Amino acid sequence: MGFGKITHAVRMMSLANAFDDADVAEFDARIRSYLNLAADAPLAYTAEPKIDGLSLSLRYENGRLVQAATRGDGEVGENVTANARTIDDIPVEVTGAPEVMEVRGEVYMSHADFAALNARQAERGGKTFANPRNAAAGSLRQLDAQITRARPLRFFAYSWGDLSAPLAATQTQAIERLRRLGFRTNPLTRRCDGPQDMLDHYRSIEEQRATLGYDIDGVVYKVDDLALQNRLGSRSTTPRWALAHKFPAELAWTRLEAIDIQVGRTGALSPVARLTPVTVGGVVVSNATLHNEDYIAGRDSRGEEIRGGKDIRIGDWVQVYRAGDVIPKVADVDLSKRPDDAEPYVFPTKCPECGSDALREPGDAVRRCTGGVVCPAQAVEKLKHFVSRAAFDIEGLGARQVEAFYTDGWITEPAEIFTLEERYGRGLRALKNREGWGEKSATNLFRAIDEKRRIPLSRLLFALGIRHVGESASALIANHYGTWDALEEAMVAAAEPGQAREDLTGIDGVGEVMATSLTSAFANPAERASMDRLVAHLDVQESRRAVAADSPVAGKTVVFTGTLEKMTRAEAKARAESLGAKVSGSVSAKTDLLVAGPGAGSKAKKAAELGVETMDEDGWLALIGG
Ligand code: IVH
Image (cartoon, rainbow, N blue to C red; front, top):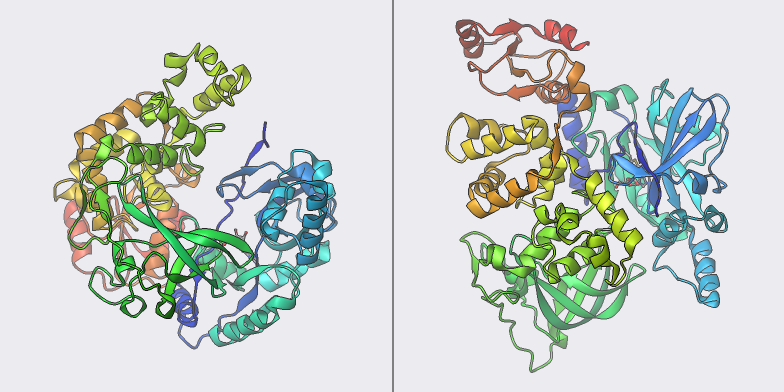
């Protein structure tokens, strides 16, 4: 039993991060370049605290709260409407709002309420929470809304999703409008004139951080003008008009007790520090990443010094840090406290899981197990990745379960998930005696597996766990090729130089390294056979952005040339791609349309020779609807 799923009407985005002043200046410069604004043209932003809680989307129809959903993976969240209604800061009715209005913001718990809740829980022998954010998440995700009601949750509104009418013309006015509608908005939100002003406000918020009474982990900057936000649009998961400037990570010193080697799904040997437990920013840390072999040795793959060339030895005092959700990292070592008998660490050259040689390619910082499919660690990690939230996300089949099924030999590769019922089925009975399983949970599992036979191409591609191919790259690639068959055919063809290869590396965000990783995966007979066995059980949904279907340029290959006057090249490209067009840098027989501004030269000539339809910028704008 869990919460129902809700598909967000407008995707819930995450934020690009900045860690220093230079990143903020670059953000401003990037936006100016995208919008073709001079360095001295006025451009206002807002700056506000980044609340360390969990985001929530509230949908109001005709002034009534009809739905509340967690972020989930950004596209699909969980229905927590009953729980949201119990939160005092969330109005159940509003007057004077657009007919449809989705208000977004952060659910959090104050320090005082968190301490009191933990004390209460401890007294009753209940679960205590590591930090206010976990307490807020645990309290919101209660199946019994009465429990949520008893938990002191708060809410700040800072954004919106679906709207039947705009809230205002600027971010500042929109936030003010939300405030007047009855939402709590953060009093430290300011309008700023540019990077210097933003950084001043960042420092001021940082100074007040300890006395705010709730956790914040940075400052969020947003372009104030909503028309400009709209023009800037989004990359796959983050808007171009916003930036999260994170506070420096918290640090602590502790002893390194041991170094373990974990083997990942691509065979990478990752050293993990086992530490004497220490509290870092309110969380107890007992493991931290040591990155790779060179990092322990104190030199990177180019031989340059890390931490002044100090190596890390078992028994050392090391400094660890945590930045937000990120895995803790070892940052430094205190040589003055090194035990006399501490020996330099010798990195293994055999896989600790399967005994195969572990090799380093020239220029690669990572040592990898060469065992491939025979390495159980790689197989298990691939399966865990396959069922993870951004991949197949099968309810009831998490990391723990696939690991157990793998150990028993029931599931050794992804395709076998989809034949589990067939093979062990009546497996219902077989599962009955298994720990944690009963007839009902087994039936639910098979249903959950069946539900995922229909899968979007982007998720399938991400789930395959091909090195370098992350979630957003998978989405871009899937959008480009559309279907599994087209993708497979293209990956085979793109192994060799030529049109298919250029087409692949022409996708924004796909470089040579990723392209080679993709084509090698499809060229590997064992991997390819495993993919084919998997796809035989699936109904792969075509990946094209929804807007693409009814756009006149969907599926067309477009080339821009000459000077564009109403938008920058980057903007034109992003806009065309968001409408489902492919944008190419050169004219060929495959080009459907050339958009030529003044000064167009050889490309216009070539298009004329090939009989490619050509139009000017105004014609293009008229075609795509302004
Ligand atoms: S704006 C399209 N403003 O940070 C932009 N997000 O790292 C939507 N967050 O998922 C986000 N405080 O949960 C925005 N003042 C703030 C925020 C904020 C916290 C969270 C939010 C988001 C995450 C991204």
